[in-house]
Length: 89
Image 1 (cartoon, rainbow, N blue to C red):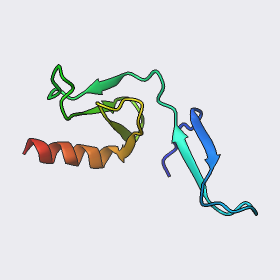
Image 2: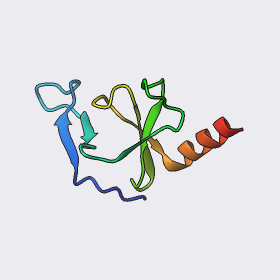
Image 3: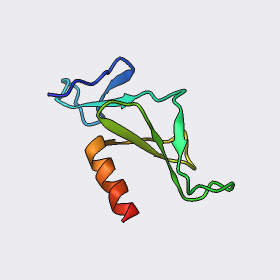
């Protein structure tokens, strides 16, 4: 099983948990201050592009370059590589 560093994770109870505790949990990873890399297809006006974060073991965080404070989608590295290869083809 792959090990992930969750030292920067912020755990909080799911909105689906009930008053007795429930079995639900959600987690958000803190990417504050991270060095996001903007797509080479972005233009000076922002474009309709994405940013990725390099150096996170096993996954590639992806976010909308126009909403830098918004959520990030975390994609397994192999899936991201297949996506990029497909786009290039």
